[in-house]
Image (cartoon, rainbow, N blue to C red; front, side, top):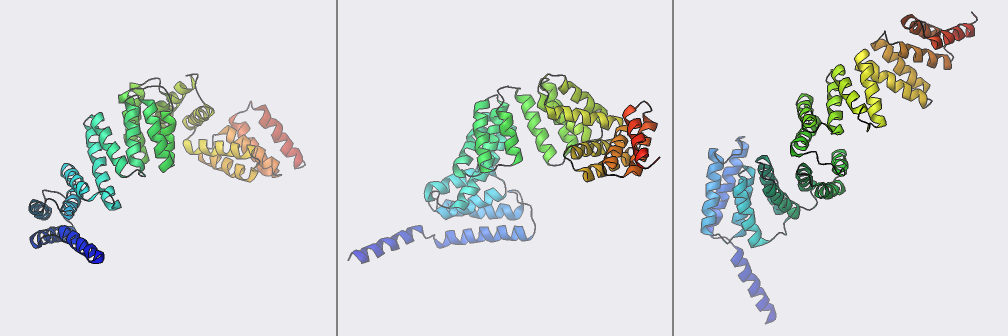
Length: 367
């Protein structure tokens, strides 16, 4: 008796979940129209004819059976694919009310909608609304770093560094890449540079990572102008200026950073790099500095290749000729050492060290 009762309950539940034939037909037609639109490469839009008709079929099905979760799933997918975010939010909320959150695909779709609504609110400057949407996205997909990145960004722009740090820490836990680590470090500063500066800085960083250096430079410049004491913004201005082939402007900004009293060893290295790039060119500067670094590590073979590249790129680079001579001498290649020291002396006749080692190289060859 109990077995038959259990079977009867299951059958009744199945009947309750089953769609009416008219509803099923409408949903099938909606999905067929959507598939036709995809096959014809019709851009997803609620205004495009095939997509519009698909949505209309789904909405008609919802009017017939508003308590059927499948109706709202189909509508939610259609609204999401056509980027009708407000309607998508309504559909997914309705589906979740009826069917719960057991399906990971539903969570992902609903979270995607919240992310896009949050971004739209952020673009309008409605930070409270944006934060609410991003929090909703985080609840739906707690292992997705994107909501935490956006909440961290908004809190940082608003000057709430504690909340920013908390969200960036979570983003790093979920995705410990260079970008998340960088902004976590940035959020650990207690300084509030202001919404305009931080917003411009974020835009610059995003543009730079997308390979849009010119656009990035404009944003970094605005950040530095809005917060003149923000060294990190100035560092990025100088970095991009140098990469864009403007060593003189990069040098000017690196000198400002160096004069701040807060310059790091990396800043001083970049200042030297900009000085050499302004005097010769960036390729020669980088080759020379890499050569010095290799020599300091005891890797004379690599050092020599770098110094050779430096003098090839900038034949008037006296220091590069000197270091090429030194490396060649240490390798026992006295003929190359003689030639390199000779070039260094031609460019800098007062270089006593080059003259001394030139004579040593000649004596080593029996002259």
